Image (cartoon, rainbow, N blue to C red; front, side, top):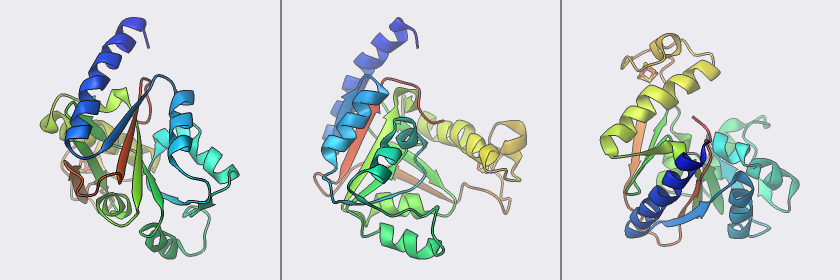
Length: 209
Ligand code: SF4
């Protein structure tokens, strides 16, 4: 990232943080992946039960690996014989890690899900939800955020999971009803009823997709 973009992001992040605060959500700014990792580990007490949904950005800053190796109880849904049990256990976790498909400049989070384990856990269940979000996910408004989720995040996800969807072939959303579609549930998180539940670390790096 060039310095002019980094500078623009620093300024824009202040607007996003204010938006999050106005929506009863806690926002933090990290200049680098390393700062984001430190911020996340400062937030999550050792001994916590931690689950996660799709969260490429959390992987990219090293958070998932740090949790796996640290003094936490990690619910690892990717390495279990009973995935359903792991997904249900996630609703009672102390912390749930998530990425965001997009976030608006005024702090609204947008997420799309196929199985809905991620969006349902964001909506309710885990005591805390932690989003790690690169500044590349920030969109001017709700309409562009949804367009980003449908036309950038979803096609990349469809491609990386080898799904048979139109977007995996064309790179943009065709509003499909394919059996493989990952656009089953859309969650717009515009306010948190519960102070201290939703935390968002904005990172001045390109993370996820
Ligand atoms: S609706 Fe279908 S084509 Fe559009 S992004 Fe979702 S999976 Fe892809």
